[in-house]
Length: 383
Image (cartoon, rainbow, N blue to C red; front, side):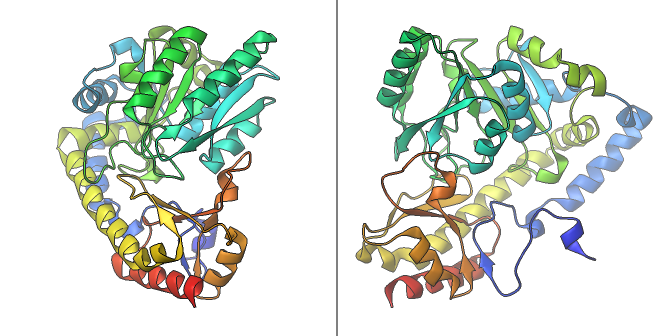
């Protein structure tokens, strides 16, 4: 089978490529999805193969709302949730409807590089706000908002990944969440919260989402099952106030094509009903935590040479900061000679970071290969 004509992921033989933030296909729940597909087709028949309701099928929306109540402490009302085809589609749809030409969109610096690509498809101004181990610099954001509002510049929204951020793995601290809530109350800022990694926590459950703790109408939360289940199903959800959901669900895209992810929504509903979903997510947490630990343990000798990182508490990524005298370009050049690859921090930056960094994904490879990769990186950067 020629996978180059099938998959987004393109591997180079013999190279352990930590650049790809993809799941390991061997971990994906093929048997569970197959069984759920058969059960759902037996139950719903041709209903699964026609156009779906604009908000997505009700049984799944209801089940997701129950799940949200478990980890957020509050459930969306029936009119406050809709299904999506994952966070990439959802972000593009939100930006299409809420951003006008020349609007400002705030982003974290660094942030998810492919979200930047989506936003750059729009005729907007992207304004980066620095973030660190505690997340977004809220003071910098507040100053920027004040400056724009003083000259009448329209702000569309802030795009933020406050929980297990990509690429840094950081979670916005409770103190900064409180400060951000105050900024939102004062300025009217809308936040688009990318919450894709929430269920992939390792040691401690994350604090509730911005959507759950900020005033209704101030946060559009994008949730996805691409990381917690399987990206090929292309299914996610949006929670927001009822007026926002009405606008998103009532757009021309869904009026023409019907609800997003109609067929996989029935499969996911069945996985919830037979309790397979919770078991799958728990398995992922265990496996990805083990893989994180393997990579971090192998890299540990680098700490005495000035390389630093924050232990990721969830998600897919390790963000390694480099010593002042070492550039990412130079480091990766040496790492690639060891048949290992990763991504430079500059890929995720829309302004200077003020330091050099490398992002490594620990999701794609098993522990033994991550140990091999980590050992090779240590050799490359210390010999």
